[in-house]
Length: 207
Ligand code: GAR
Image: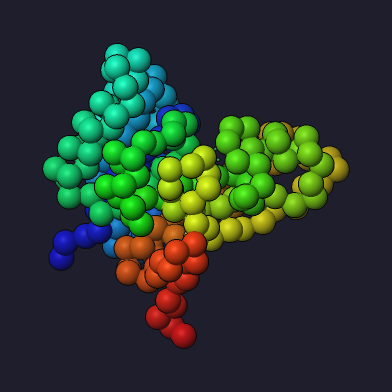
């Protein structure tokens, strides 16, 4: 039986990438399989994770291109050649242009470490601590042309305690991301996601 084919874009550590690979191996990704890692940082730990897992890697160095569109065209060619059905951003620290956003509209998701629309952009966990909110979390959303502005698919919250540090809160958020992202990818893989403008619902087959 053919499986649902996903590509993961990541720039750093790759714990979400690893969670998706593990979930796929454990049958917890709704039949989805990670076919490709796209990475803009040759030295990023996520590259080794992909190689260890035997997953194809598309590596590029942005500054050797004259525009974002130029390297994104190459990425799209690669995604199309592998017949990728869902593009999953997991700590990919670059804004995408319409070259990818339009081509994969409705099939392009991101995970962000805050309860959007609060604290978009970089250092979201630090921003939440600085602001003094008592609750933060993680959001999975569709990607549009803006910075963390696309329709929300799912969110999970985490309390911020007085004795939390950036390190402990980051760990707490990674722990919820570990469950949340594979779950959302499995919903896509099983055709359970319905998109109506900014309103996204999941059809639960058990209800
Ligand atoms: C994750 O916490 C993800 O939510 C965040 O980067 C981290 C990547 O960790 N993404 C963003 O901040 C996007 N704006 P990882 O490389 O260990 O998966």
